[in-house]
Amino acid sequence: MVKIRLMRLGGKHKPFYRLVVADSRAPRSGRYIEAIGYYNPTTEPSTIKVNEAKALAWLRKGARPSNTARVLLQRTGVLERTGAKS
Image (cartoon, rainbow, N blue to C red; front, side, top):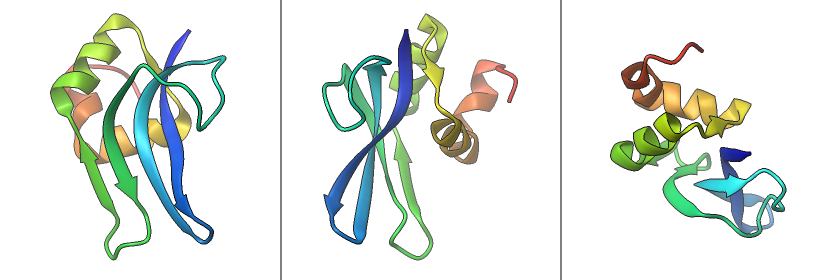
């Protein structure tokens, strides 16, 4: 199954996440198919950047977002464009 989820980057106590499309069997910060955005929770306010075209394409192909990825996609308005239920 293909999932949209977060990949942790950054140093100790300085998390930075990349929003990626990955096989569900791959490790959290391991191999991924495509990067579709990033999330930086350390800035004030938090920075969220998503390539909407790529995200919509993967959601239409059947990729399932993780709980956290779903919240980030809702904040950016991408999920509303797919017509998916939250």
